[in-house]
Structures are given as structure tokens and as C-alpha cells.
Image 1 (cartoon, rainbow, N blue to C red):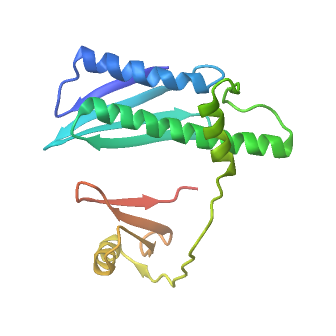
Image 2: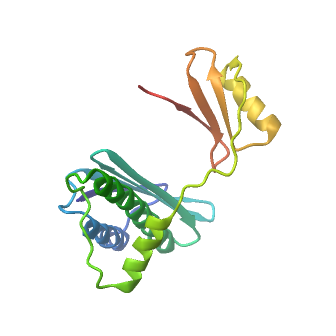
Amino acid sequence: MNYNIRGQRMDVTPALRDYVEKKLTKLERYFEAPPQSDGTVTLSVTKNSNAVEVTIPLQGLLLRAEEKSNDMYASIDLVVDKLERQIRKHKTKVNRKVRQAAGARGVFKEENASSNATATLVRDEEDEKFEIVRTKRFRSEPMTVEDAILEMNLVGHAFFVFANADTKETNVVYQRDDGTYGLIESVV
């Protein structure tokens, strides 16, 4: 798998590039064949924070993780750990569906139980239940994006679901880590 590694407000040194590639190639052990898509890695520095964002498009799945810490190498380690957890969760879900449907194999490689730690971790994730502990219902009045942001700030939440008055679709506004706002629109 190829990775497009770029830096924002920083230069990517050869040592840093080698470290990123070395860590991300460890993810290839989870796949039957190395993915043919190109992944994107963005390294950035803001104030006292070193951030790493990795996006890996796969067939029917988009792996994405972002981590920040005081050290760039620690951020890289954290983001790779997060990607591994995402892959294992998705692999568990795919394998469960395959077992239920007795269908074809997925894109993920079967692991042998030679490592007790890995076998225990996979077994724990298979036992994981997605329990919904609370359900909220609300009446959504059509509003503009700006009104939705004001309403979100008024109730003190990090996100707000609303009916967009312009598009008549359900949208979500959210506050990003850097203090700016984001909008999520559904695409059919």
C-alpha cells in the first residue's frame, strides 16, 4: 500500500516519513492481499500539539483516525493503534455476518490462535454488545445552518441535528477541536 505523507505547517523529515511507513505497513497483516488504494497521512503542528491524521480508503470501508499529543512519534503510535482497533472491530463484524450467512470470505485475513493475547482480544470484541442506553426523540423545525449553530451553542452540546431549511434534509452541525464548526450532510 502506498501512502501520501504530507506536512501542514512543518517539513516531513526522511526519518519521520520512514517511521510512518514502518508503522502503517504493520496494518497490512490484517488483509488477505495488500490494499490497492493509496492512503493519506497528514502530519501537522499547532502550538504545543502534534497531530496525525490517516485516511485509508478500502472497498466498502473508509478507515480514518486522528490523534494529537505533545510528541509526533507518540501521535503516530496512537493513530496506528486506533486504526488497528477499527480494523479488528470491522473484521469481527464481517466475520459474524459471514458465519450467519455462511457466505464467502471477507477482505480480512484469518488469524491463527498462536497468540493468546490476540485470540483473547478478538474474542472480547466478538462478545461486545452495542447496547443503547438512552433514546431521544425531538421535533425538528426547519432552520438555517447558522440558526442550528446558535441553537447548539445555546444548549451547550458538541453537535446538533436539524432539518436544513434550504435543502429539506436532515443535517448535523458540530464543533471541531480547533473551535470552528463542521456540517454533515447526507448524500444518497
